[in-house]
Image 1 (cartoon, rainbow, N blue to C red):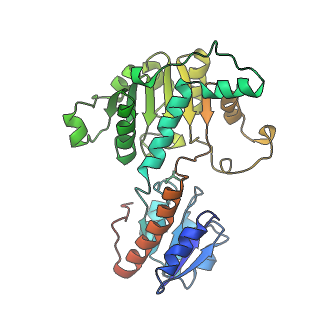
Image 2 (cartoon, rainbow, N blue to C red):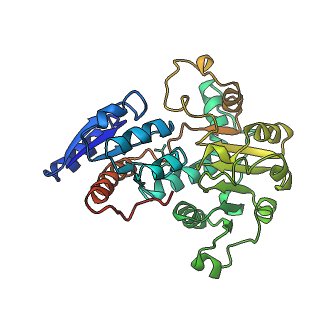
Length: 332
Ligand code: COI
């Protein structure tokens, strides 16, 4: 069996090599480049493809894979929003993802950012760099006094709930399909509006869907509690960045932490050499604020998560090739 793995980074390579050593019957070609129109021909003569990228898996690429007889594409990440679903279906290409490589990795970053906002660490670090070791005016707030609103209670949202409860925070949540255990515990509110109105900190854990694009916009920000803090470690498309900036300018939003950004592709995980050279004025506007934390989509970037992404995706690809199904197959 022959698999080609695209976009393999140096930090993934040891986990790929470990998997290969344990699967002598499978040949894996590791390709550092992403899967696109320029590299798809390399997949010819392989039985399956493993990939991770934020760049789109286009119809042209999927048609080419189909023409090579490739029927299995295993992503090393969760999100499948960058796949041309129609083209995958038309070519009979089954797609798998890694739905739970480490929910804790994402949840822990979300809570870290809540704490950093509350304790104003960005401001203190900046003051320290300038030799200023004073306290005022940056007095903090405590997590145990907060109501944390969790939008979407999948694996990651539930992990966030467990962690913030450990701090003694009050938790409320919204999900169109409530989790039975959380429902019994009385965690849910009935509408997003109720969540916005009652949260001191709002943390987003929904996938990117057409229906929720820019769900955080001028109107929904208007429904929020004055002085809310917003955390997004989910998908950039959930937030209308211009509306967020307006909310920060007016003081309605007291702080925000974004690990994802709607225009992040081609910007996050790139070294521009200096702040000035970052080619995105809105992002720089946000980065310059001491009440806004920007991290370049690093929530997933832990040793446990990266290992699981590589090895679970290879397992899923083998299963798709051998049996035509996998417990990680995604319904497109
Ligand atoms: C996902 O798994 O969908 C992510 O957002 C992480 C990705 C940047 C590797």
